[in-house]
Image (cartoon, rainbow, N blue to C red; front, side, top):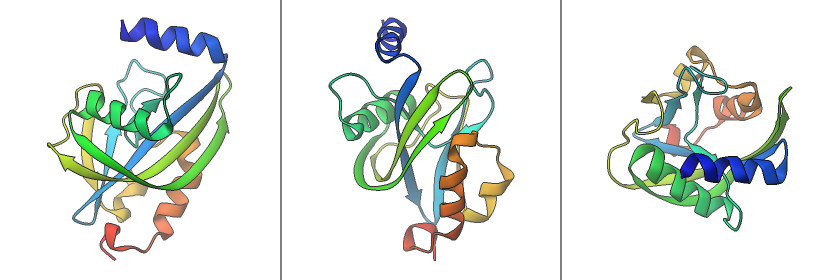
Length: 148
């Protein structure tokens, strides 16, 4: 059912995909997830989240996706970054929100792996090209969330 729902949604909007992603900090570290090897951009690391469905706000999408993908509950805070990026096969519109983990411990339910990393470790992980602007901002981000 979920696969059919995603396919129908993608067909309605063509090659433009709207994505909501979470920046979840804990103890000076940031949560990242690894894409399944068989997925688009397989094996790369990313910030957890997913595609927005019709009728959902970006915030509602994020709560749903994090519950499905990681089995945890979050609260969605401020918008941190908004990016539009064109890949050869599709365009993505991404919104990254600062989120707080409310309940549970992240588990890789719909991803290959989960990992908590510090700012210095960001460069040691390969992320999709669409995340480049966000990664540069996170590298310069001085805030209590990142232990600074």
